[in-house]
Length: 66
Image: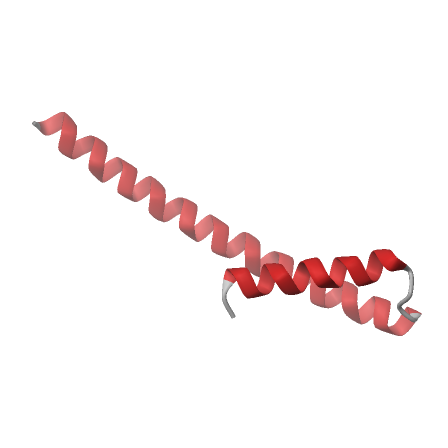
């Protein structure tokens, strides 16, 4: 799954939970799925942030060397 797809599913899930229309069993399942989606999104964001730091560091070093 992509970050965008996971985020969209998470947003829809939160909206359904907040509506108060979910039965208790579905609420628990939805909460668990939401936790998985949230962890996935956080991991993807962290990975992208690390890649940006590496790219920024490489760019800064290249400019400093010139």
